[in-house]
Image (cartoon, rainbow, N blue to C red; front, side, top):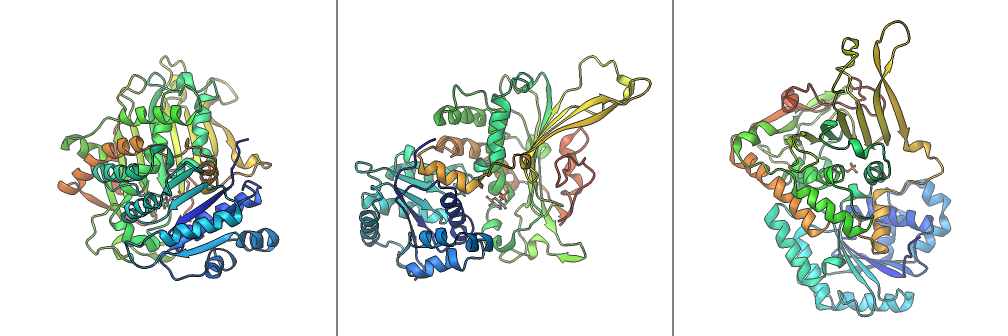
Length: 509
Ligand code: BG6
């Protein structure tokens, strides 16, 4: 097992939603699992006028994000943890001098013996990244001569290729690339990592994992929720920037990458980069027109309740042209994937929350059971990322009786059957990795830029052409023409909440 050295976690944006909702619960779970080092403190920093006590109340004792079970069953753990939680007010001045912050870090480091090892977690809008990294650098807080220093950066990582490059340049001016950890919480999901294991730890899948046997690949990321309280952010972002450029292209990279030489962080990231660079850029309007669909949800009634349309959501422009649904068809220009279409879609306000990868295999090249109805029942491998996490193989079996009637059967594996294992939450896993200096599941600068290079022309086309913005009623599987992209192949697989339930049935939750 890797060692977790003594250290201090400094969270910028400590009074924000992410700290209470994700970061502190993740650290508490790590404490509960015995993963934290002996000497460990958290220092929250932000502009809110809080004391240590107020911070502790807000993120722990009065937090609505921590289950009562945790609070009641682990009183000693919680009170010990609270004593290791501190807060530093940064002041309202944008250019605030980090001298006082440095002083506080030094004091805590001395008292709690954190060995000068610091993680700085930037849970702040991108506009603040430059200032914080510059200020830290000016206080020598990037200097690793007496202990390591790491910087974790939250998404959105840029708004376009140009802004992502600028941000990389800025961060790399003050920290070395090896110190920068760009977080993409999908990479922390156990099932996303399982994509690598499914492919590279089994000899039954990899020989088939290419254009000779795979007909097309479909990836669906659906959310039943709308934009909730994040209308202000989302309206400037949209589905393509918010989900596709980051989480979904990371999944695509894991599906299409070549086998790395080893499980070493740089080997895996090198292969992911090559994979992202092999996505065929779509630049001409005709291809973009045929290969992309954007849409927005409009108001409807779900389970007897009226649901707002996107343009009626808080902080969303009444005439907004921001997509809440994006579906993209594309190709991968390399030896393995030539001519295999990829279909990827993401959306808010769908019938259910689900993320899955579906590998559709080709029908056998010589069919002896042509009249059996097998043609329409191709083999599928479904990797369910969430919920009901697992893997499902659909294959043909003979229906008992005379003749050769073929039916499709399911072979399934569910993560929930591994009851003895605690499956770490994404943030828990990623934080632990960063604490141990393992960057395998963090995106490198060049990967992020390659993903933007693919997305930029689509955004440009949507912005500057007469590309239609379709509407779909909240609670349905996208606009009426959603299947147009899948020409000749029928329709998207509209998954249900449960892995093995066949399309056609879905739960509206
Ligand atoms: C975030 C997006 O990165 O991921 C959100 O900004 C989205 O808009 C969320 O809802 C989805 O994450 P998950 O883990 O719930 O699928």
